[in-house]
Image 1 (cartoon, rainbow, N blue to C red):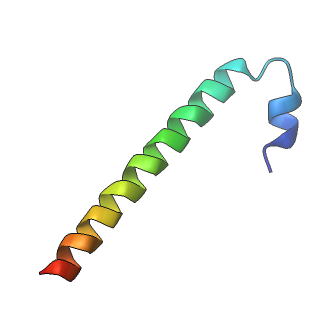
Image 2 (image 1 turned 90 degrees about the vertical axis):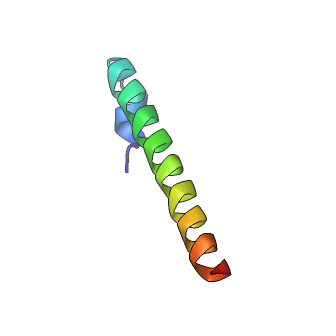
Amino acid sequence: IGAPVVTSPASIPTLSTYGLMLMSLMLGGLALARQRRSRTTL
């Protein structure tokens, strides 16, 4: 989906924002996993 955006030379700022998006998604996934684990243990 984001292949042309990555290949474009002017996608440096977009890459940084994309990295932040991935990081936020990872943190959100970890938080959801912790909540699910806590709920299952209870």
